[in-house]
Length: 397
Image 1 (tube, rainbow, N blue to C red):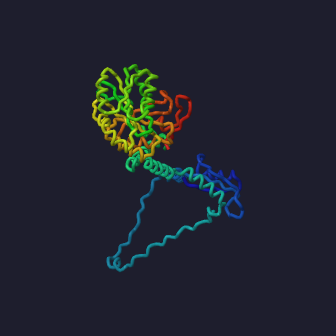
Image 2 (cartoon, rainbow, N blue to C red; image 1 turned 90 degrees about the horizontal axis):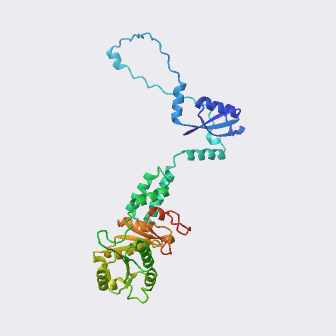
Image 3 (cartoon, rainbow, N blue to C red; image 1 turned 120 degrees about the vertical axis):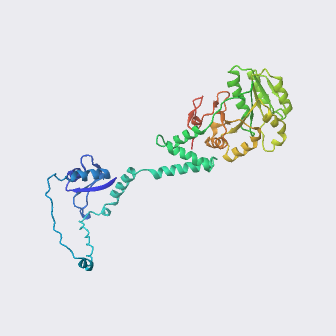
């Protein structure tokens, strides 16, 4: 859109001039009273927006078409020119094009600065906002890199977000893109196994025991499956007390084990159990060397489904370090805990996408058994209302 000024002794006269040239659809953007010191041809100025296509239409409409009349043939006598005279004749100099005389035109720079700023603000509002969009997408890519997505994956995601911007804003487009890329497998046990046996593994302090009890209530007791609990934390003083208390309250049998050999024997002894959930001690880097026996059983037993429990509150670097440490146990899925306490769930989503790992469940709060859900990207990246009516904000930013 271009801008053009019209002047008159009154506002009405200036508007009339604009409408005569631009038509009834002229976009009137601003008007003001002219200071006599500016030397402009009128007491009032009206600024209109002019679309180039409109200008072409106006010019073509204003130029009358020539009337169709029969024209008499034109005959012009051309004198003969002798060859030698044609050679000796010097070329005539090219005609000089004279610049048309410019009439005095109001100087746009003479307008008051406040009025010019107003026009500039209108221009910025009308112009495409591409620079702002690029800034938002660049910032989004940098934030994804910081969250552990990596340069290549972050660039792919931002490209997907850009394609979605026709229908929604950038934040919503990012959630949709992450949701489309994330795999969810909210199940327990191996698909082909006759029994549902799942072991939860992870570093210390990630809430494996409480998450296991929530799973026991929802997928064992509520589903009326024959359920049994096993803890491998029997060698640590007081390590099994919490799970034993929960098992007693649910009236569910529990085995407290200390070695990997006893784990294999216990699984064989309870073939009638339709679902077995195994709690393991939190393993730090130093603990891994001492836990080789039972970790080997977890990784090699054909019926055990190993799921890695990670907290949404962990940094991208720590998430990667723990994932690499537990990878030898061949986890099939990632269960995420403490989503209610995380500023953002994006780092753990980035980890899963980079390693092509599906999610299973999410621990959404401290209450047992209520605060458990199947992992869902949309609900975890948006403000949600939990089961107690409290607002839990887990931002996509």
